[in-house]
Amino acid sequence: ACAGCWADAVGDGRPRSSRGGNGDTVTPVSDSFDLVVIGGGPGGYASALYAASAGLRVALVEKDALGGTCLNRGCIPAKAFLETAAVKRHVDHAAEFGIDSSVPSVNFAVTQARKQKIVAGLVGGIAAMCKGRKVEVFNGVGSLGAGRTVTVAMHDGSSATITGANVVLAAGSVPRTIPGFDRGGPIMTSDEVLDLDHVPARVVVIGGGAIGCEFASTFADLGAQVTILEG
Image 1 (tube, rainbow, N blue to C red):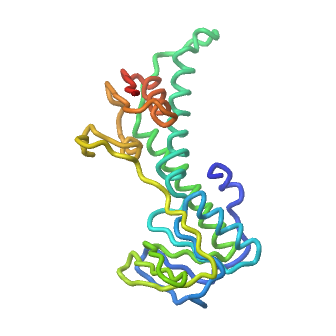
Image 2: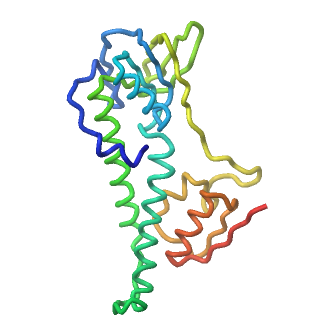
Image 3: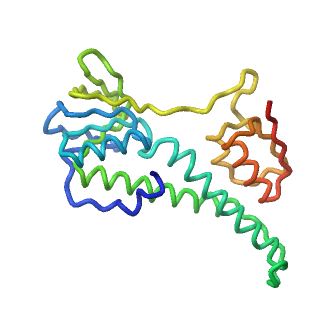
């Protein structure tokens, strides 16, 4: 779903109001909604946009960036890294196709900048769709209470209380950690590895599932010595 967001980014409506991360709080037309969605990832924003298209009054609560893990710290940035790795692999083997080329070097800072530009564009696309379909976005942490009441702790320190005839919980997920392996320095989850500014000489990936193999393939193609540990 994330990869197709950009093509549908242009809306023709105006938002009822918005709660931004710039410290400004805009009073909404109504604190009662047909649908309140907690979580702005693929499940959450898709639910919000679909409901809004059906004519419902919708609020979307997101504590971080729209797009959730998939767009900001998962599928999209990982695929951007894979594309960089694929380009290097093609150049490495260009001679097999009759193309003479020099040995390529990797400027991972440029790779990071490209990845972030892709992510920012897609996040902006989702925001534009929410605006165009009049989904009211609350930037903060939502807590569900009795009577389908949602209290939002806003980023500027204020709070908002909204109610929904229906509430969707799409709070997302976080990387699992291993006891004794605290995050920091060379110990990273799939979140931190996406912020690397260089290609490590050696990488050990704990977990040989889809995510682990994706990162292993990326860094192996970029020149790192990679080991996968799978139980």
